[in-house]
Length: 138
Image 1 (cartoon, rainbow, N blue to C red):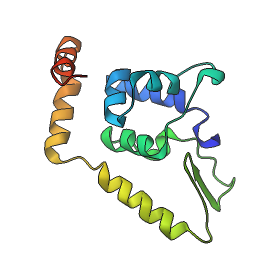
Image 2: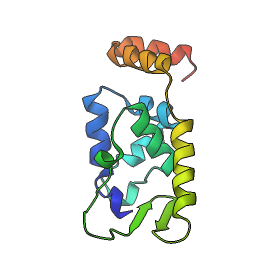
Image 3: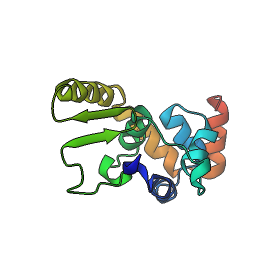
């Protein structure tokens, strides 16, 4: 998990900068709100980390580069890509892992309509967001 050492701080910063609640992030990633709270936990022993699918959902849906959410130490382990649930060396399996990653990115790709709805939701007041979430059953 060395690429996620400061993820909890980066997630909180992202959330606050685009005015998202933990509930908003949970809905984007298809997880429960308490899991997002554990992603942001200050105490390492209470902290958990998102899987690849959740991490990609978050990045795509907030239009945030993956590198911005990860601790990328250039030079260290340059021949290895390591994400939760995905560890691949430059040898066998890299093409398969890249294909899997591409399929996952296609799955979470937002339509123009989705992007507009998300943009409007982000600009809405807190009360209006709560009302929309209640209407959606969230």
